[in-house]
Length: 235
Image 1 (cartoon, one colour):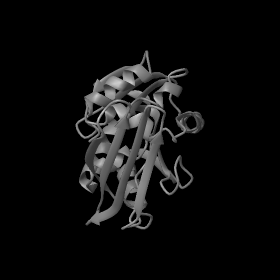
Image 2: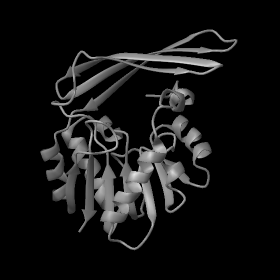
Image 3: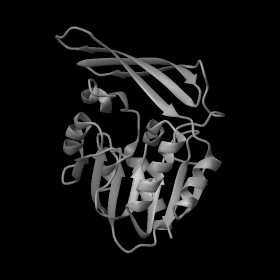
């Protein structure tokens, strides 16, 4: 996913206020974190846009499974350490005071068994008193099947349109993204990118967090509408 269009990712999401979101994340970290250090890990960091606004007060590391995204992240958040890694097999042999996983990246683990494994990895990489903050994808009750979506970018030298219809297959939301990209003096490009994200319920997710020793809570008022945030502090 995003391999062909990693270069266009930040344009597609140019509407997203990463600075404002990072500010809220900072407030939550200071409110809940009990450990003394300032080492932060961003799991599924994408193009590093949140880290761009967190690296001023935290010693940051970003991991992502996509090399193309990491290439851009290194330019967006200079001075941050980046590494290719999968959140399901994460083993950095290092513990952190803060772990974040934002923009619903955790939905890509697809199944509850994978979600549990991922939360176990978060807990394993946390120092005692450290805090994990992750932003879920939608639940079945907030996901609207059959709904048409469109994102556009209208620059002087590049125009982008992305459309999809929300689908559901079992416990998965399926998003077939269709892209049209027009750049100055180039032929129009078309890409199709499939995204499958698990529709995980809040109660079950909180149980997984508790089982791995995290004092956990769910905040309905998160960074984006209808998604919320999970907060876990390692006991």
